[in-house]
Image (cartoon, rainbow, N blue to C red; front, side, top):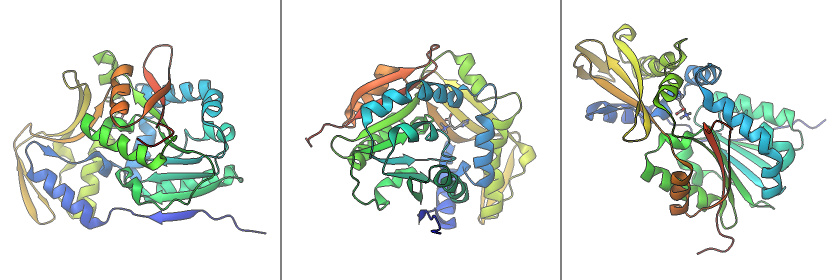
Length: 323
Ligand code: AVJ
């Protein structure tokens, strides 16, 4: 009997990375802590719970779009590819594609180590023919993951509208790094949340059950635990709203009163109502997103949406021969 193993490449951020970035973000005005720090074990669990709330449509709608077009995606991409998934999380969406795509290897990458490990093992068990290389890293570091030369084309899969976490210039930089990763003739299959009415967007980030609020506030719990901070969870509130001028949902943690917080030995004074900006989630029109992708070196191959025009899935490709 051969024991199935999956390769695990660990580039997990160290406690020093967390401390340095959190302290730098808290010294800034406006204060800002990057959303990648949401995803400790509890944060990853809460994110999965968000995707099950009735208000948070992106996950459900994207799955529906992927299911409806999986056969066409496989036909356009072909089999035997090397499939890379930055921010793979629970590896739920890729299952829809695996049978049709029949890639030679699958490389899920995620910042949340245990979550990724469990998810990658489950995928490997479910698809015994598939070689799985799990890489624990924040997806801005994709170039550092060792990938052996594949037979077929390289395909990056970036679902969930995680691209929305970058501001547009950084999104172009990230897409350009993906273009370099997949190489000439490589593909990117990417989910992008669409611009729509404010009420729908605001509701998706303010679910009635308070799961998104718990997800946002968990960042403070994590900082308390990992950086020895003393955030009083009763004195902070979740705030999320669509900033239409900038085309993005903003999430903040708002201080309900004037208070001083100690973080890693440093004191931070917050005024009543002052916020820590914790996430941007940009929304795009179809042409607008294709414009970004084009600036990053991709050409649009196909785009699919649901009937209500809530969410888009783009298939992009780099030119066959280098520029
Ligand atoms: C994982 C970044 C795509 O922006 O919708 C969900 C994260 N934050 N609810 C998003 C999130 C609050 C999500 N992304």
